[in-house]
Each structure stands twice: as C-alpha cells, then as structure tokens.
Amino acid sequence: MSVSRLSERLPDFPWDLLAPAKRVAAAHPGGLVDLSMGTPVDPVPAVVRAALTEASDSPGYPLTAGTPALRAAIAEWAARNCGALADGLGVLPTIGSKELVAWLPTLLGIGPGDTVVIPTVCYPTYEVGVRLAGATPVRTDSLTSLGPARVRLVWVNSPSNPTGQVLPAAHLRKVVEWARERGAVVASDECYLTLGWESTPISVLSPEVNSGRLDGVLAVHSLSKRSNLAGYRAGFVAGDPAIVSELLAVRKHGGLIVPAPVQAAMVVALGDEDHATVQRSVYAARRGVLRDALAKAGFEIEHSGAGLYLWATRDEDSWATADWFAERGILVAPGAFYGPAGERHVRVALTATDERVAAAVERLEI
Ligand SMILES: Cc1ncc(COP(=O)(O)O)c(C=O)c1O
Image (cartoon, rainbow, N blue to C red; front, side, top):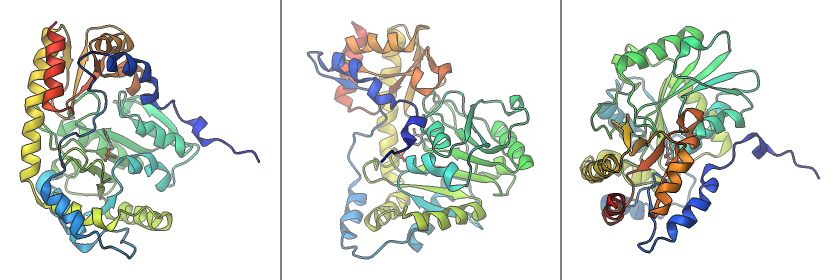
C-alpha cells in the first residue's frame, strides 16, 4: 500500500536540527543550561493540582464546549485581562494552543488556492497549520504589500515569539479593519499577553482594537506559560461567537476535547491571579540577570519588551551564535527557526531554574 505523506508538506522539525549543538552543550563540565525551548520548569500551582486531583474520578465523556464553570471562567478572565466585553463573547477550551494553531486553517475550511498571512519572523506552527490545510502561507507584517491574493486568515502574535515585540493598538486596529473589508479572519495569538515588561500588550478582544465588535476576530490563549500548565495541555480561543460556534461544531465531530480533570484545573487556574503574579516576578528576575549578562557579553537585545524570550544578535549567522553558546554549555534557539528574517539572531528563553540561569550568567562572564 502506498501512503501519501502529509509530513512531506511540512518543514523539518526544527528541534531535531539542534541535536548536534545540544550534544556539544551537554558535554560542558557544569552541565547543560537549556535556554532553547520555552518549556516551564517551575511547579504547577498547588491549588491547580488540587483541582485536577479532585476531578480525577471522571468516567464520562467531557463537553467539547467546556463545562459551564469553565466557560464562565474563560469569559471572566478575558474581561479582566483582555478588556473583552462579556456580552456575546464566544469561548472554547482547546487542548493547549498549539493544536489550535496547527489546525485552525483546516477547521475554518481553508484550503488550496487560499492564502494565510503569518508574521515575517514567527512561531513555526503558523506555517505548519497553513501547509496542513494545503493553503499558501505568506510571511509579511505589512498587509498593504499583499496584492490580489485571496486572504482568508491573518495571524498576528503580540507579544511575539520569538522577538518579544508588542504590536500597538493602532497597528492591530488596522489589521482588523483590513481583514473585515476582505472577509478574512484575524487570529491573534496572545499566549504571552500577561508578560509585558517594558511594553504593555493589548488584546484583539479590547474595544480599542476591535471597535467594540467581535466579528472576524479570534484571540488564542494558553495557560502553559502563565500557570506552568504546559503538561496539562490547557488553552482556549475566544472571540467572534459565529466563528467559535463553527469551530465547536467541527471539533465535536473530530473529538478535540479537553479532558474533564484538566477543565476543572483550568477553572481554578483562570480564577486565581496570585500564582500568576508570583510566576511573573520569577520571570522578571531571570530576565533582568540574563539581559545584563548578554549585553556584557557583547549582544544587542532587540524588541523583547514582553514575553518569555530575549531576541539577541551580534550580527552573525544564527547557527554560528548558537554554536558559540553551545561551547559554553548553553543551548539557545537559532533565529533561522523562525523564518529567513531571523537568521542573524538567537532566541534566549527565560524558562530555566534560577540555578541554571545563574550558571549561564557565570559562563557568559568568562
Ligand atoms: C506563540 C506561541 N503560540 C502557541 C504556543 C503553544 O503553546 P501551548 O500549546 O503550550 O498552549 C507557543 C508555545 O511556545 C507559542 O510560543
């Protein structure tokens, strides 16, 4: 039997390409400092673990739409953190946000002949999602350069992974207006929204951006970073109620359901800002010391006003910089992972323990 291989449409899995640098870095006598992936290392908050345990006797199928308690918790969180008007907001839990990013074009019926706009330098899964759907990705930050392409979806990501750039309200408003004129959807990946440092991110759900209307806008959120829940797979999408109900209709058929204990844990995580404030200050401290150490080692930090990464350059090929770090036992992500325009930067993640961050700082001083 011959199997037509969908994976051939997809780029190389970037992290596989980093294996040689990882071998070099891991051989450092002081051990590896892994600043390559944004994977949380601090504990899951005790209140969230208790909620998961409490809900562990869950023999029945969960609701794809989410329990009423979860739907309310999402709407309240979005009102507090995104300025979303509670009235009429569509909400839907997702199994983390990566699956939604990877399948959104397909779930929206986007396919061959359609164009999806993604940021010039961005999280690789936007392109993966477009390719899975058989549509055409276009990398641009300026919609006016697009010409007559049939654009169905525009991804924005503020604060950005990998650059930490924050898009101002006026920019997002223009994107929303441009998309509405053409009947395209704006999907705003906001999973670092609550991690603003020098810049204050704004949500596409804010009336300042969407003019008090939800048509054509979706905000994508994740509890992975805010609440250290990457292992639980907990995210949600909120916005235009008609689009969200279409996503629900397709996801019900597709079995894309958040497990019941995770839904219960999400209710508690979303309702509790205390643990998120503590976690935020942990990242702020790590960011401060890493930023200073990188500057002293001769790196320029660009953007990085929010989010979990420092976007650093010394104006050489990103693989050469990654090798320089690897020789010091530090693994960082080459900017080339994020698009051709990232080829002279590296992304340094703030997600390592204080002890490992201190080790990195010490090695950068030598
Ligand atoms: C911009 C962006 N979107 C989505 C995700 C996916 O996060 P998760 O699937 O853990 O919610 C990530 C993870 O790093 C990310 O950086």
